[in-house]
Length: 242
Image (tube, rainbow, N blue to C red; front, top):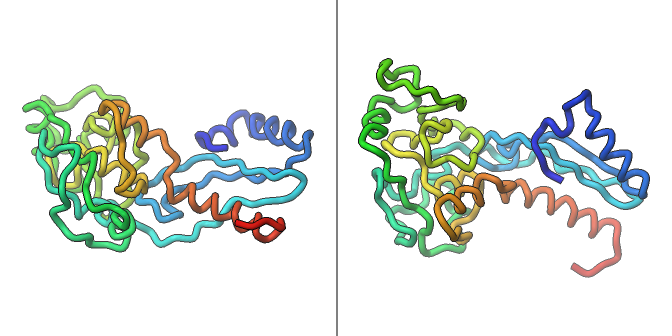
């Protein structure tokens, strides 16, 4: 299971207790923890609750294992698009610049889903006032909005991991989703990179649908770490051919 961290902590752990009791009653043994994707090679601070279980035997969630990756490591090889530029399918213009980029591009010869939002003139003017590493704190009063989101009108910091990718990453007012130095929000492909989706995973449907597919997902590299733990347990404890 995967859910928000409050699943394990709300009500002094009452929900966690209920889940454990229900599954233990039918013979399962569970392990749970709040995992941060950043600890598993994902360039993003994304904390989520995980519960893993096995019938009549113990199994544990994976320990953090990977080198740390930042925003620059993730997206600096992608085309430098301005507002409204880009197409759904295009050629790569730059060589990979990090091990993470090489991993993401390993099975891909074509770049998909890298199309910039067509921002309003006012939004571009506002972003132009925000230097790398800065946010709404530098905007004059006439440019301040009433957004309730943390990180609103803030640039991603390229030598740090991203904040949690949501389903509204195309909107600068929705969080720290403005490109580190270009005057636009990140694209679907850039968000996918930050979620650790490889470039050969193509997103279809409307832009809104694509953003939901990216923002609601468990980062693949974290999912892989959990799946690997399950596979190792199978190989260790079961006489099966894999």
